[in-house]
Length: 77
Image (cartoon, rainbow, N blue to C red; front, top):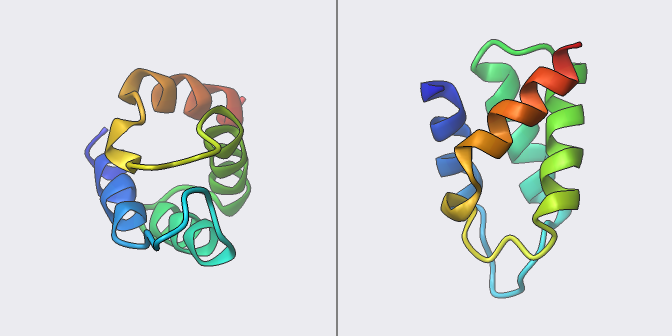
């Protein structure tokens, strides 16, 4: 679970003036996820699910860790 907190912190640092996921936020999330040791396809799946569930992404720290865990399980199946 620590690695997801790290990934969310990386994502939080990518925020701009506009709400929502931009291409850089997507790339940074996936890079942080793979750097934490997760497979590329699972990271892409997780990013898509998180973006769908949290399209505005005003504050990535608000993403529920239980939601991350659930989506991670789904992406690894």
